[in-house]
Image (cartoon, rainbow, N blue to C red; front, side):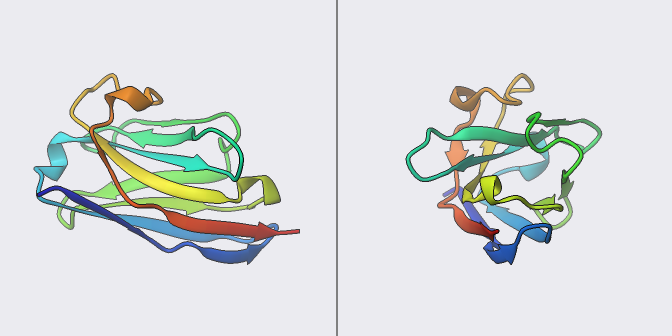
Length: 124
């Protein structure tokens, strides 16, 4: 049974930082593209970042480029999202997702497995 479990969310002031983690189990982690998506209240979910199987390539939404950094540790089956210079607009539930497609990146439909999400709230 595949499980993705996010952690690290919380309340932070604008300009602050948070580091999200996603622990994966039940899959051959190093074979998967991993992605982060988020959904703010009343809005559709949106792509945040993705990383390829070995961490050599990352892709970011324009809204987070230069502020967020995605990384992975295949030995520990973990993927991270370091979020710096946070803004109130970053407030959302953040989800990690796993895909076997090398073309996944921002394409939500190509992600097969999803976590339950972790809340990030940025106060102004």
